[in-house]
Image (cartoon, rainbow, N blue to C red; front, side, top):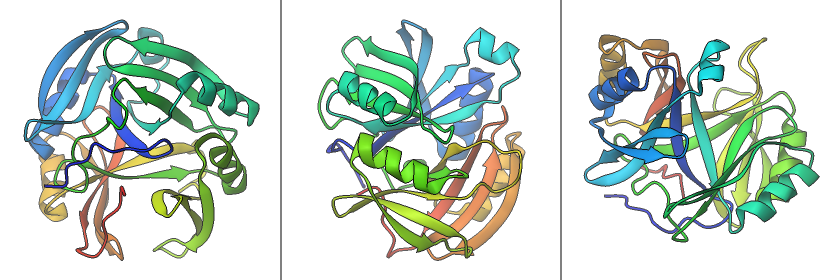
Length: 264
C-alpha cells in the first residue's frame, strides 16, 4: 500500500473539494472510490474528511454562501506544503500573486492560506502542525496521484512557483503533443503544466486520482450522476478519463502504467 507521510516543503500534499452540494458529492465519491467520511467542525463550517482503508486521503466542504450565490462551479483545490505559511504567503505576493485568504490557523491541524498566481490559478499553501502530514495514501485506487496547472502563461507560472515553492521547470512535450513543463523539486517531479484546453476556461489546477479500472470507473461516474467529459483514452502515463462529478467539479481518473509512479 503506497502510504506517505513525508511531504517536503514544495511538494503537493493534499486536495479537497469545495462543493455546492457536499452531501451529494460525498455520495458520488463513495460510489466511485469507496471513500468513507468523518465530519469535523471547523471555524468556517463542516469539513468532511475522506478516508480510504482507514487512512485520510481528501476532504469535502461546502462553498461559502456568497460563492454559491455567484454561480461559481464546485472545484477541487490543490495544496502545497510549506515550512512557514506566513513567509510563503508574503513570498507569493512579492512574486506577483494575490493573497485571497491570509494565513489561517486551524487548531491541531495546521495553518493555510489561499493565493492566486499571476496567471489566475488558485493554490493553497499548507503548513501542517505535524511536519510531513498530507494525504496518507497516493498512487492507488481512490488516492491523489497528480496535479496539473492549466494556464495561458506557463513562463509566468514557472517563475512564480520557482520563487514561492522552489520548483524548477523543464520544458516537455505533453503526451498529446502540446508544449508543457514538468515542475521539479530537487530531483522529484511534483507537478506539470500545459496550455488551457479551450477558449474561455480560466487558469486552474486540475486533479488526478488513481483508479484500478478507468473504464469501469467511467461507467460508475455516469451511474452516480456525474458526466464523463472525455471517454477513457490511453497515454504514456496510463489510461485516463476526464469527468465532472454530480455537483460540477472537474477531475480525472487514471489507471497508472506500472513504470509510472508520481507523487515522489
